[in-house]
Length: 308
Image (cartoon, rainbow, N blue to C red; front, top):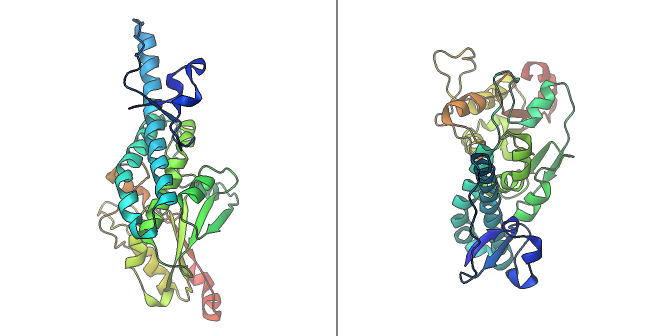
């Protein structure tokens, strides 16, 4: 069978018999028997060839992400939680390829344009605007697709303090959001995440926990909420945990970061740019990570100015 995008054939040539049973509009794909004759393409001018090649990349992008999402939908509907991992993992390469194609397909900003934050919440806060988000504990594909590219929300907040720690599902949720916004990536012409994902975890500030923050950021999160920060020392511990280790040439060496290998999955950037962007804003004006300190005790209120 050959999989073609719906734009590959004229509307008049389509029929209900062409569509695979149980197929979804997510993939916008049809099944065509190999025995069907293929239309011969007539010679075209160089300019026409360029236009056709442009369309081919767009179709490849839509198909790669679409088929990946379709397979994930089938997994969620037909497979029990016992085989969740074995069903979803083989699709990661297909989804990742589609995301990369979408990002490469977008036009790069020119040197004259102002610096663009990949975290749209940082961009709005830098402009003095308010931000509005939603809280969720539903990390399913369906929920991610309903939130992806929604212009009415600025971020998605996942509460894992009062819910099970599900790192693998959290990583998949971020991937679903990016893949579901493929049209927005191409339209905007950049890899800015809409919406970015923030999360809150069980440890309190006084526990001086670092591993959970570093691990969560390596999954592609753009913000961390930490419970019960009471002292400046507790806040600084989180700041150092978020920051990558600074080079000797760094203009912002303090507080020194403790993150070694920094990863920016789904951000669509290379390792060198990742080390610059995966830093704390506004400490680093070019950073894209946010730290929300939750002050919940009298001691924290008394130290609020010092914490800030």
